[in-house]
Length: 305
Image (cartoon, rainbow, N blue to C red; front, side):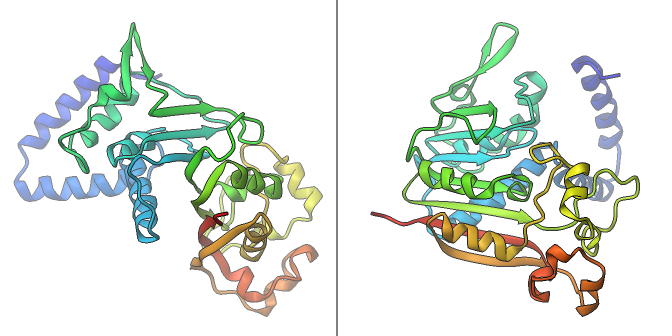
């Protein structure tokens, strides 16, 4: 049964009183352990901030100015707080779209981020939460000129041509069907000279198993013929993965018309020639180096006219 806001506040009050009585060394240890845990959970504000920081720093590294830019996150997931951080960093407008995650604007959602926002990480003099999220009767509403959270399908949502300066995703592109049309659409709505960053997770995704294999070593998901795989995970369903490898994504980016600024394998596993005896024939044309890659960082630019 879900706890009410009042029950949560009462429980946290009890925790705080106990925490305040601990020696300072114990408080420090608890704080670091808790932050590490929360950064690893994808429904927390600290996880959102860690993801934001990773993308933000990459964008800055490759010369993208955030100030007044229009930003689109594809497959935002939860808890839908990245837009607060982008606005805090000076973006002009942030939009997210996710096919499966509903948008829940309520006191709990806002309170998850309020303390981080209150730290004034980027612009302490000019940021006001009320510019983005406003109390509206019993709930909250967004200033959609600055932040827009959309539950919908990227394939069909009516985005305007060349309406974004920056598009990014985190562990999303491995889940899409029709990657060719998806990338062409991104190219269509990205402004000339605009940038994209995609972090792509090529590891095992086997959510139907009770005991999930080690994602950093398993090649089990490549054993399935296509028909068997798509029976388990129908294309377009929430847990479908396309099983494309790094070389496929690189080729699709080029075909869609993007300039590849950086395409780096950020994680790999050790496999040998024996792997070919264990995987489906459809994967036999990939060289070992391609099969080894578990994660990719892709930085792309739409060429100017």
